[in-house]
Image 1: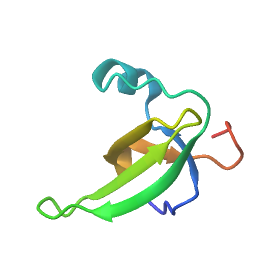
Image 2: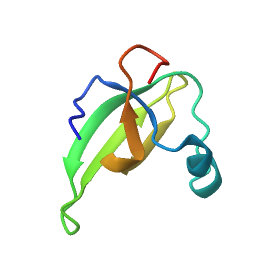
Image 3: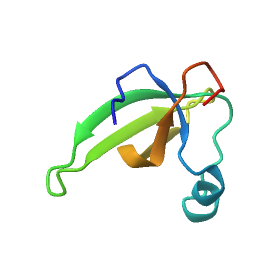
Image 4: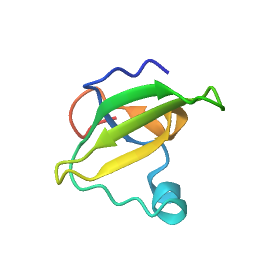
Length: 71
């Protein structure tokens, strides 16, 4: 995935994210950090919403949006 800091994203599968991870972002999610896990070597993305709540997950859990709110 080609996510960069500053990109706007949405959960890849919104219904599953709410069930499994109890995610309920309000407004747009903006990527603020991308790093590689020390042990897993997986790409970990941190996104923040308008209220300031941070969401952490692997890069495959997010889908980049072209225009705010539109996939």
